[in-house]
Image (tube, rainbow, N blue to C red):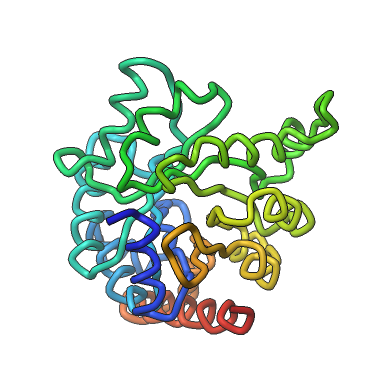
Length: 277
């Protein structure tokens, strides 16, 4: 079963397109969590317990797990999310050539990390992404127009063809979508670009970051971020919030209140996005 088919089932089951980012930045954790002395995998379990009823997907960012204990915490997190029936998208922005790309792509395998989808960087071209694209049951989200202000430095440049770099990436992603497993990363902080990308690729689902702490456009994220790939009846896509959910309880006095706040934030975002579905 393809990733987008599984995602469509999950979206229908929880009536949500919310992606919850699992980025346990220790510098952001309040005293209520530090005092509880929770390791990352336990912190993530509490977040998953609090939010899974509202989550179409969980999205850990690899940067928060690249240390001696981090990969074990990530393995525990993926397994626990799967136990709750929620797919996992690893935000790693990978791309390379040859054996390196094949090793990066092994996180999508059952005998690897076993994540359901991954973000990739198109800068090296098609051959760098082939090891990811060839795993037809996995989702491959290609960076297109990112939510950070500096994204304009390269992504908005105009090519000799008259299109921007991000528009060209969208067109290439459409060409690379032979297995129907390609998505695009397009930020909610640039709603005009979000609409322009959707015009170029009407059938590719988006992962839309930037709705939470970055204050992106929720209405545009839903209206332009969802699409129905071949074989899927209802439009699917993901709108991600990381800090806006997992750090919603920063003022909490104890751990229980902290995680309750995360659950409430995920529920609010689900309701907010569902206004536009």
